[in-house]
Every structure is written in C-alpha cells, then in structure tokens.
Image (cartoon, rainbow, N blue to C red):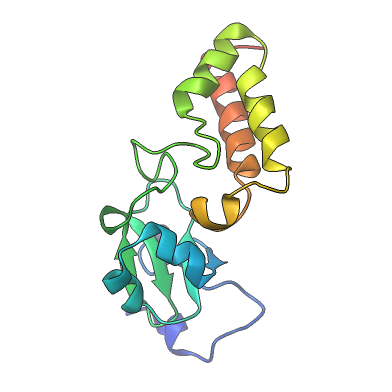
Length: 151
Ligand SMILES: [Zn+2]
C-alpha cells in the first residue's frame, strides 16, 4: 500500500498512477465517456485522470486508486493501444510518421499540426487525455527521426 496516498491530497501536485507512479492528466467526463464503456466509467469517481506513461496498462484512474485498464477502453492512441493512432482526431499513425521521415519532409505531421489548431479539431473527445495530440505527435516524430538516423 502506498502510504503517500493515505495523506491529505496535495492540490498542487497531479495525482499519480497507482500502477506506474506516473503523473496523471485530469480528464473531463465527456473524454472518459468517449473511450470506455458507460459501466466502466461509472466505476471511477470524479475527477478522473489519464495515465500518460506509454507502456503502462492503466488507462484512467481516480483518487481512490481505482483503475480502468487499457484493455477495457477503445480509441486510445498508439502506443498505449498498439493498434491505435498517434492522433485519433486526424488519423495520423506511427506508420505515417515513418513515411514522413523516409520522405525527408514531414508533410503528414505538418498537416496534422496545422489541422489540430483549427476550431473543428476533435481532440477534446477523441484524444485520450482530452488535450491536443500535437505534443504527442511531435514527441514521437523527434524520437523516431533519431532512431532511424534521418535528418
Ligand atoms: Zn500508469
């Protein structure tokens, strides 16, 4: 049992995932509802948090350490869901990023970044943490470009 969790909640710090200890990102009920079955969503209290640690099997959790596993969700981004997209809003996949790197010009990534800034971007419900996918896309792009040795 994590003793730190039994103390008074510290409002200045984000709560941590009960499984991996990573910081959670608060999600709105609409975001949760878009990614889990209604019954599972009801098992979490508010506020609910998204675990952003890539290999962690926790998708969402609450302050009482109740957890919804990745297996019980749908539409989470890669690599949380290995079959998922990097940006669900615009359908960008990990393969698209590799193709951009092979091309030497990040056409697909740039287009997603551009569209994510438009008013009709659907990140609020489609993105697993309710936030823009741009940061995740850029993080992955930079990491893959280094892995593949591209310029
Ligand atoms: Zn976690």
